[in-house]
Image 1 (spheres, one colour):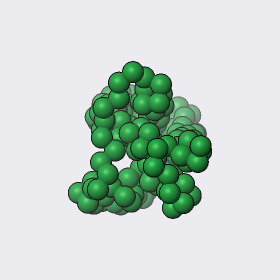
Image 2 (cartoon, one colour):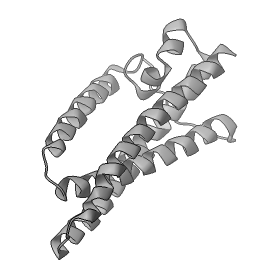
Image 3 (spheres, one colour):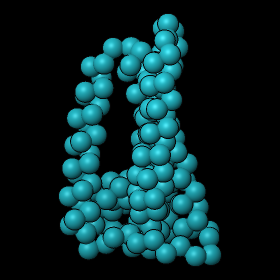
Length: 166
């Protein structure tokens, strides 16, 4: 029972984190449309949405991160410990108790994302909103894929993705 509570906390915490980012960035992104946009702004918006949808949403989330997180949720439901229960979202995202290479990648990617956020924050509108709408596309794709993989992990017939435990 404790394992399922931990898994529920894990998916809830991650969903709230992604949902919060989607909400905050959507607000900034929608401000873009209050500015006069030239053809190159529209082109940049289309490229941003297409690129981030593919690179972040499909390649990053759907093909790599979401199946691994769902596998770790399933693993957590069967192997709960006090630390894993309390820090379930961080466990599921791979910040600890994961193979060394993946942990290094996770921390480096997190630092890279923080750096990109700081850089994009310096952009003026409408450029910041254009980038943010692309990121929202990727995050929304990622949250959707995470929820679908999680449902498959717990209720599907076959789920063979690795939780990458050490």
